[in-house]
Length: 253
Image (tube, rainbow, N blue to C red; front, top):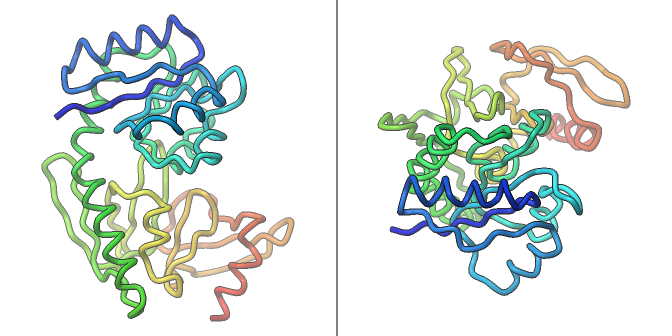
């Protein structure tokens, strides 16, 4: 099978090097285009079939690639490439398969490409399952179990056993009420749309929590709410400004 790859990189030398590394190390990948900016990418995407994978530099000469993703509602797996590591969480909210720092190391790029291939089937299954859930939504049915596969390890666990989901260090995790942490192949966007909104709420870009996980709530600045969760995630769990009002409404449902 051939995977069609789109490179978005405004430094031509870097883009050429990426193309060479991709195609020389795995003949199942084919670079279909090298684009340098947001407007050029919009035009290309409007006239061509969607690629299977994107290699996107975050900072471009005419903006950031996140703008392109939002403006075109682009839904493809993406390996983000950047000189900085301060936008990892935002990247993983947007179909990130991996997040590589410049200059890109060939070995790490190959690992990211292999990770994409491993997850491709899982991602396709997830989309199919999500469609099935949406088709069943008229009967208000929600999945009772989640399946995840990392490498050769397949695991299934009950949604009712999950305390919260969160993103950290480029990865997605589900934490069970008993404290067990599981690596997932879903995105927070997928989970938020799949799960019963009466039981789970997205408090910010990093956390999707269950009502049962909340042990304490404290009023924070700008009307936000600081939460204590069980098990303790060892991270700040504060509702975003945009979601604080909705969160308070959710508590009263």
